[in-house]
Length: 124
Image 1 (cartoon, rainbow, N blue to C red):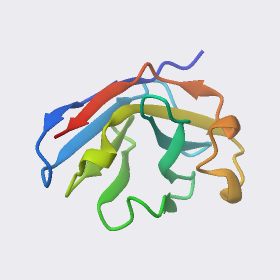
Image 2: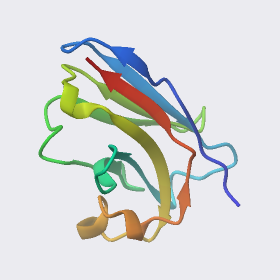
Image 3: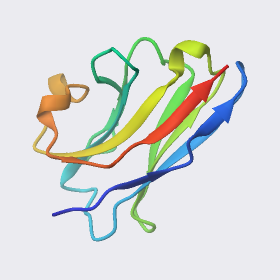
């Protein structure tokens, strides 16, 4: 099984920034789609950003212009830069990896096979 380990969460004031990391040792970013999801208490898990094997990124409307997803293949790490955070961004954030994920499903949780344990982001 592929191990995904998130880090970088924490507490920040509204308007602040955080950068999440997802370590994926032994993983090939050229064969999988990588994504970030989040889940707030009482809400369904939702996709926020994803990047496919060709490097094409897609974002949820709620984070466009504020979040940036990127890969460092040498470090086997996925990142999520989050700027201008609001209280609505408070959630547990998860890294996920999927094999042959269609572009139309890059933000759909069911399309992904492997998940990390999550890192909490709290904005107040």
